[in-house]
Image 1 (cartoon, rainbow, N blue to C red):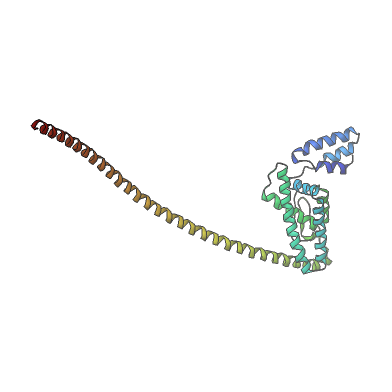
Image 2: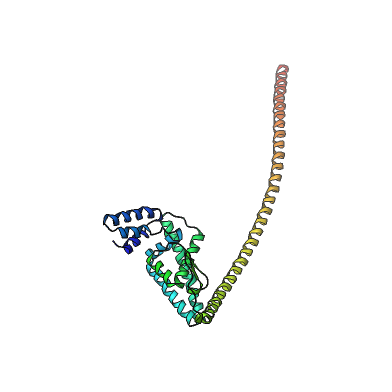
Length: 278
């Protein structure tokens, strides 16, 4: 076992298992009599959640990560040659690819029992942007040995700021060329931002229409509820009238039954009188 093999194994485990795995690898190196290797392994730092997510991507989707780094090479080449059209096309591909991979990292984390917030996924995207802008960061991403998030401002090494490190200095002779390249990149970013504004405005208008429709539906339902309440009130009144009529009819029936009974008795008495006279 050498340091590369140990690092590959260590940065491929779950975050919760990192410390124990490092202890195990250190003990293994010591058991092999390699104290220097044991010391180097002990220095390997535990990654943050974002670093772990990027390392998962490197192991689960090596071809896609390779595509990210190749796209970074193409962007740097377009920047050097001040190709605005190429920059706009490649920037669009960059945004789409980074967003897709950031989402995939969240899915891989969920598969491993971890819920990842939007903030962490944004930092994954920033780290992939940095990997495309700086070959050194890109190599660490490819190896799956990222410790923590990396950020960048503007495309290209001159705008890169890696967490825990320093951005490389620009050579004076390249300042003018870099400024033009950054302007081309900024123009591409502006076009993308304007497209995003247009899409957001369209979504806002659609949302306004949905709100208006919902308000109208609520008003219709409330109007119907009021009508039903009025109908219910009338029905309750009619029920009260029907109950009163039912009670009056019952009392009338009782009186009629009593009158009928008296009439039968009277008729019987008259029959007896007629029989006696006969």
